Image 1 (cartoon, one colour):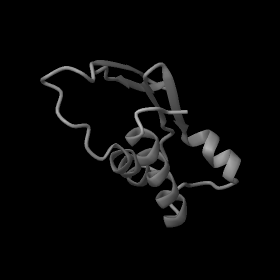
Image 2 (tube, one colour):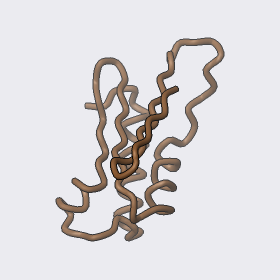
Image 3 (cartoon, one colour):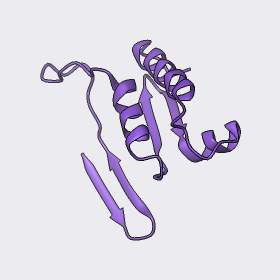
Length: 96
């Protein structure tokens, strides 16, 4: 676990887990957790990176807002899509 914070730059939280470790509990609903962060703090830019099996999944809220041409991602249709996408990607054990 690593936490790095700088005024005006933001905060980086990095957690690394060995998936095969006997003490690692089930990951749970990561899609729902990420969506809760996004919905609860629409004014904060999030960059979520998930790496598994050498692949990488990236969710960047600034990039999403630009591509969708919206100011917030709190629309229920957008949130539902993102939750499903994140859930699908993470449950497949591959991010490509």
